[in-house]
Length: 102
Image 1 (cartoon, one colour):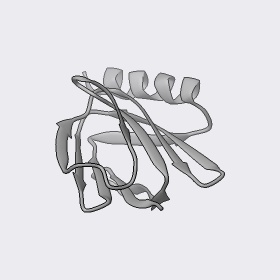
Image 2 (spheres, one colour; image 1 turned 90 degrees about the horizontal axis):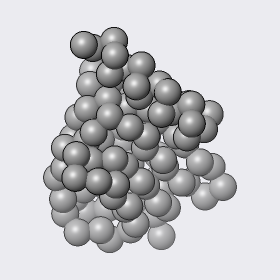
Image 3 (tube, rainbow, N blue to C red; image 1 turned 90 degrees about the vertical axis):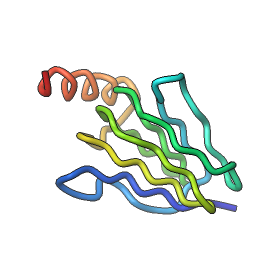
């Protein structure tokens, strides 16, 4: 069973689709999300978001924002985000996005 994920920045929807698993970095630490997760709101930290959707693995470098989980729908509202090829590159992108803001 899967859940809906929307990663949204001011300029565009960065990624949207159904996922089996999601990992995001919040200001309190990493959070893993599976189907039927309890409702939650959290502040996002600069870092990497990984979305696993079947055989596809999506990595996103992002800077700031909020995560909301309600009724098998996860929304990540972020100040800035970019899709990347892997976790290492996503971390580089996240750090660059933070530096560009400051």
